[in-house]
Image 1: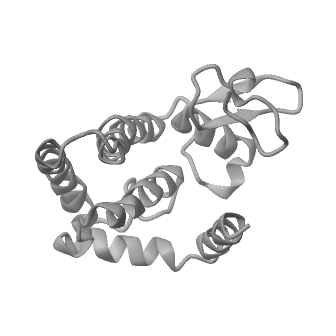
Image 2: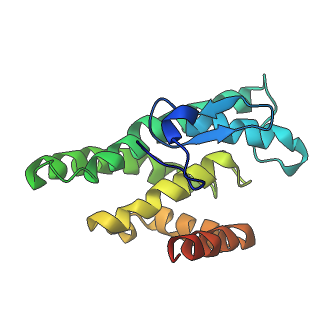
Length: 171
């Protein structure tokens, strides 16, 4: 049984057995990171974290979220598996590096994935790119991604979230 912070069974909340899962006050559960972050962004549209539903820009956001989820998040997640041999992990890294080249080209031309404004796709990408440190992937190989990580990491809300995460894991 997978337990949650209060000692309950996580599988009762999310039968998929993995995060992310957001249990709402009315009892509904929303799973999958891209769906959750769009939902949260839509709760406060004035923050500008996601373009309006139905717009072309929203479609571009969904494109990036799917790319991050299926190519970057999934690709890095495989590297955590202890039973995958190092030679196979090296093959996965090479595939990831091809995906990083696309991100590098995009961020070489603009500050954020959708242009000039930070949004939920940037929060997601920042989160999963931080995992590269676990696998001896030197992000400095990609200068635009390096600047991007510094730019996003210097945001006050990001610093606050990282500090809260560090405190939660120190318990």
